[in-house]
Image (cartoon, rainbow over all chains, first blue to last red; front, side, top):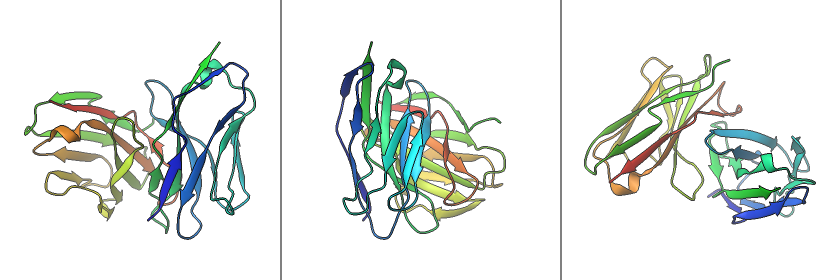
Length: 113
Length: 113
């Protein structure tokens, strides 16, 4: 079945460091791919998405490119801030028209000043 | 625009007791989802409604879990009787339709002792 494998954390970086969080997927068909973020004490929020191969999703300085050949959707940011500290979840659309999401385990990011 | 509302935010019960969670989706959203998020894992879909009909409940433990969305708006998720392994955060999400962006509520943290 469909699944998502995400880089395990926690990840600790200094402010202005480069961030990469790896995400690979297994799926039949061509699912949409998502990154969700969960800030401390808050609900999940959609960070960015890509709906087809070679699409690049971007938001708030974060980017991820849908790579069909490597079945990957790695999250990157060139210069992280303390306010980026959160848990990041990679997810894929469950397929068909149902729209349910299949999540990875999440990666906790801590950014130190 | 008001977001997805959930209550209670926290609940502590003893095993074998029953508990119910409530979700009020964003106005106009036809699709409603309940996810279970166990500590250290990503959310897992329990049940998906389209209006007041069930689209997917394949991962709902039906011997103890039940959910309803009688009027196609609010929804309740019930556990009876609870087990220790039901300790988790229960997330409600809604979307305009199947395959559209999902908006998540803050979740209900359940502790079963």
